[in-house]
Length: 414
Image 1 (tube, rainbow, N blue to C red):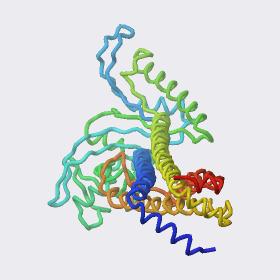
Image 2: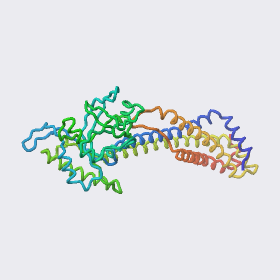
Image 3: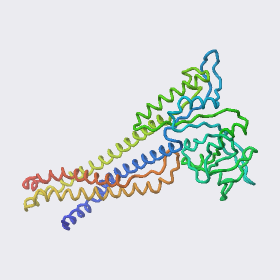
Image 4: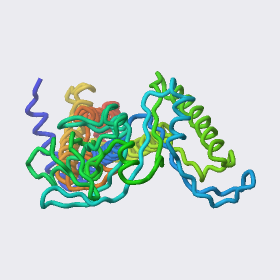
């Protein structure tokens, strides 16, 4: 039941000790403010990491070549290894039944492209039809390269959305001719990529067309594969580890490379990288929780100490109340009300301030690894409820001590 006299007492006590109440409130508000900010930062890091892994297919295994560092079978170190169609074919022949996605590419890092009076320089890549899934991209106009384009070495191309805006403006590019290094290609599709604008400055061609039109023979830059999904991370990791070891051994043997020369053929397994990144993210969030909770505990301890001081100052008043017949529960309630009131108001201020800071500052931070720092409002509200409970607990022990004071002892207190 609402007791106006009790609230009058609380406000009178606060008015008599404005500075003390203010400092107590600041310690509580800063605790929840820091905790919510840290949780928001942790979420921003998590969003950034997840965004990085949206760039490519889940569980992508990419293979590329380098330079040999060890002598093997009479061949000196320092040889530059070059993948060819036969490397892709032998890998598919051996592991084809284990693969979900399989592709290869040849990359030209820069090429002059012309449409009408518009020109630009973009990366163009010869690919297999599966490459759209490798990049986790989505066709938004037209279609992607298909098996017929690949087998017949059709002069067709699929362009990124950024290339479309740069060269074709608001016009649909489907069916138009795009000149790539003085060779005409028909635009059959436009794609968008979750990794953003940088990935959308690419242009894709059938690999067979690329090899013939630009005189690179049967050369390949990279091989890309994914394996079927497993129920658990441990199963997926075991599967990918076995596959990468066997694939590496196969390709090193074919290219006369020492079995332990990892510089000559590099293999990146995104499943292993995912585990490392998410473990790091978990540790960061746990650390943020620990720091924030410790800060809140410090604030709650401050509330408890202030309540002890209040009980000491009001000992004689408490004695008079008990002598006049006040019950122990009413004494406890009197102290608890003040403790809960200060904790709740300060907690709300800290919570709203932190959410406001995240709302204003968060969008201003631009980083590939830190995106949209935010806090689930339910988690924030739960944190506030726990804080109020902790404030009540902090006030209970001083209140219980006050309730146990004998009236005659309290009246003698100076």
